[in-house]
Structures are given as structure tokens and as C-alpha cells.
Length: 163
Image 1 (tube, rainbow, N blue to C red):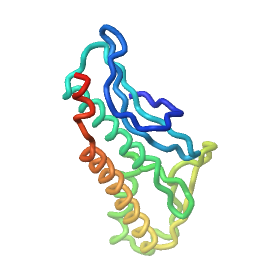
Image 2: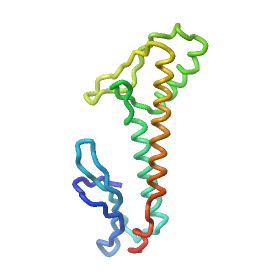
Image 3: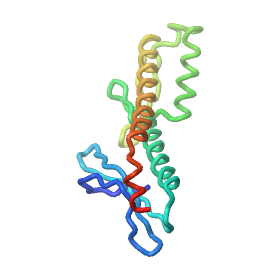
Image 4: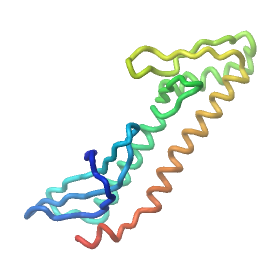
């Protein structure tokens, strides 16, 4: 789906704009700078409800993935939580019981600042690192819970009226 900025009202629905062209409108979201946007998707055929559901659900899942990957910060440091970071964090978590205090202090690259410079954080001890991993796990779960909630709240009748 494509983000269209400047929308001020939510207008979920499907509109026919040509002989074989249908536009799907979905959502109303706010940007970090206070602007707004909605999602739109153009079909070159009359879509089925299953096609509409697939497009919207895929976008909501992608948004949750993106928020999980780039939406968390620890002590003001941005965290990039992708597959590589997950493996690194899991690997360190496994070593803590065996190596304990010998691992700390531990400097770890959590992500990147908006200007592209690396974002490092120094964990003082195992307890602080465990607090970080617990907070990261809760944030990850929250991202997907919000997506599931958003999917459950969709009124699909708004899309069937135009079919």
C-alpha cells in the first residue's frame, strides 16, 4: 500500500475510479512530526473481499514488523531489533549464566542514530542487560498485539458496499 500524506479524516472504503480501476482507502495515522497519512492501494480489477483483506492485513503486519525493528530505544539510545540483533542478544543472554560478571561492562551496538552514526550502549552488569532484553521483548510483543487489535477492529462492511 502507498502512504498518502495530508489526509485529515479516516475514509476506509473502496471506490471505483475508472472502468477497471478501484482504489482502496484505509486508516488514518499520525507521523512523529504531527502530520497525517492514510494508506491507498490501486487494483486494476474489481477486487474480492479476500484480496482487500490480504492487502490490509499484510500492511498492518509490515507496520508491526517495522515498529519492532526501529521503534524501540533504551536509555535514549535507538535500538535496531532485526534478525541479526536478535541472534546477538540471544547469544549474549545464553553466555551470561556461564560467564557472569566477567562479561561486564559490555559495550554493545544497539542501532544507529538518524545521522547514520553508530549507537553504542555500555551495560554495567548482567542485571541491566536482562532489564534491556525484558523491555525489548515486551516492546516486541506490544507491537504485534497492537497489530492484532487493529486487525480485529476492522469493519469489513465498509469495503463490501462498493463490491
